[in-house]
Amino acid sequence: MSGQTDSKRECHERHANQQQPSMNNMTPLRIGILNGDDIGHEIVPAAVEISRAAAQLHDVAIDWLPLPIGRSALDTHGHTLPPETLAGLTTLDGWILGPIGHRAYPQLANAINPHPILRKQFNLFANVRPTRSYPGIGCLYDDVDLVIVRENNEGFQPDRNMVLGSGEFRPTDEVTLSVRVITRTGSRRVARAAFELARQRRRHLTYVHKDTVFKLSCGMFVEECLKLVPEYPDVLVDDVIVDTFAMRLVRDPQSFDVVVTTNMFGDILSDEAAGLVGGLGMAPGLCIGDGDVVMAQATHGSAPDIAGRGIANPYAMMESTRMMFDWLGHSRGNDGAVRMAASMSRAITEALAIEAARTGDIRGTGNTVTMTQAVLRSLRA
Ligand code: ATP
Image 1 (cartoon, rainbow, N blue to C red):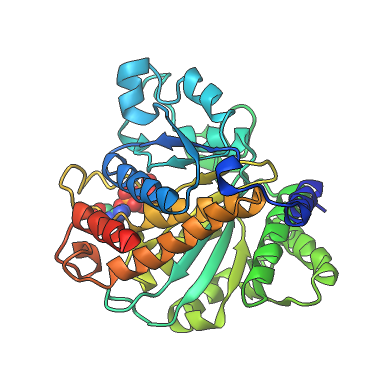
Image 2: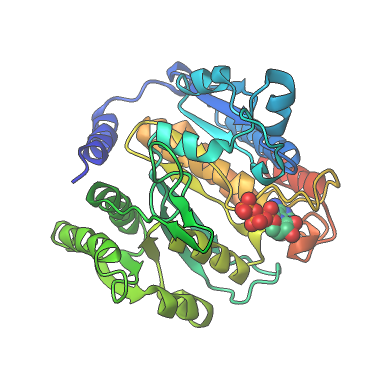
């Protein structure tokens, strides 16, 4: 069992029992701004702008720290993840990471994909990815409300399941092997994060796997999920084989609440889930771990095909940021940040309802700026 998660819970309780200082006396939250690549330069500033407005509304003190990352950091600092960025991150409560377009990086030693390093170094092992319907934006159903909790640091992803070298190798020109890493610790801690989340929602957890074929690896993941069941008697638990889940997600998404699964299954299924509710622009995410930091990171990539045109949907980045403030508000006992997140949620929902404000990918006639302005107007109303 994850001692760190326990300590987080104790931290919540400790804060709850403390007499809260007035909001102005709260230690400022230290938040990093990492634009990422391509549309990141458009949607991250939008998320920061609405956060500033919401923080002002609720008198939440925030110290913002912009940090270089990605292609622009390669140009200015000679590295896509400069040492000063890593050093800066260690001083923060959380940060907003824009999408990274690493596939377009030049073949240089310093042009690395920062994702696996950030997730590993800060032990951000659970990627919490909600899927939610909003009216009028082209959802396939009007009542989807589920969260996929994706394991973040092991699995099939060859760039993060080894300390050295790649998890893929080619012994002969004819043969390529990919290693999938599943650990008891990794499975247990992501399962616990999902159980805890289920408790805050409709108390239904589905663990998704393929232990019929991956008897040892998925088998271990399943064993670790099952070990936690007695600790959560209030949570209804069931399991679905991954291929069946992919089908049921399309036909019957309302039957799921919180879903926990291994890294690659989670990667694929969360994109599928986004397709139910308007596409990747509607797919937020929050990377959490057993430390005290969080990373707001939308599910989608850097969308180079639409970068620089002002038409990127900022919802996923805004909602990821909102989730971060809500998480920090609870973990730091900062009621203002919790209220700030609630106001952001209301304002984003109201803005999404305005056809002229929302972006074209979700049946709007607006753009990134009109959506941002609509959220700001709603916040200030
Ligand atoms: P990655 O593998 O890095 O996640 P990807 O291959 O999934 O990236 P994306 O960059 O996510 O690709 O883009 C996939 C499609 O979704 C593109 O057509 C892109 O324009 C669209 N898309 C992604 N994000 C957004 C957004 N925020 N707003 C509008 N369209 C988006």
